[in-house]
Length: 209
Image (cartoon, rainbow, N blue to C red; front, side):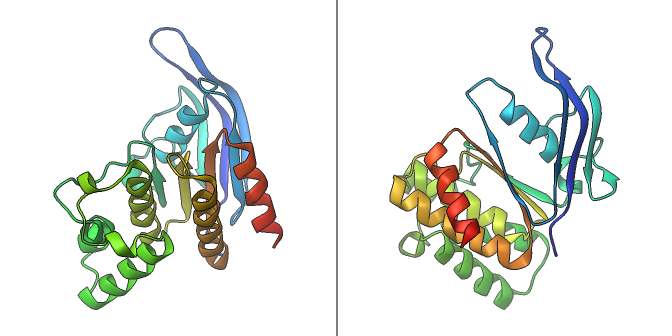
């Protein structure tokens, strides 16, 4: 099992304007579990995801990856990767180089980089766009590049914010099936934000398969 147990213990978050985004939240997500945060806009889903990822810090409470409280740690010190709806792609790099970037930082051998990049680009069905720049892609295609870049790091915890935004239903289902199959094979933990009930139903069907 390569995933981490994620435990949210009494997490609260208030913003400067007095808005209470989270109030004493307690959740345990087991290693290798696929977990979804479901709810309308403004209910605190993205705030909780950002706290788990390390982009926000809770006012109270702890976030444990296995037995370690990671709440005080920055994102790069956690064994997780996050894909937000903003994509955060490098505009001057091709699809291939955007996906390869995390491995180049770690000085992974060139042959291994090439093998893994092509695998994950194929997984998100972007083989035909491998040499394009982000400005040549649709929003849904950019989302898939960001997902491939997160997956290539093989995180213990993968966090996705509306992963099928900008995709039609058929493509969204195929992408989710591919992601779940990939993560399930290695027992990694997946946390997904969505308000898409049909997507959740499809995820359940995939998990049952």
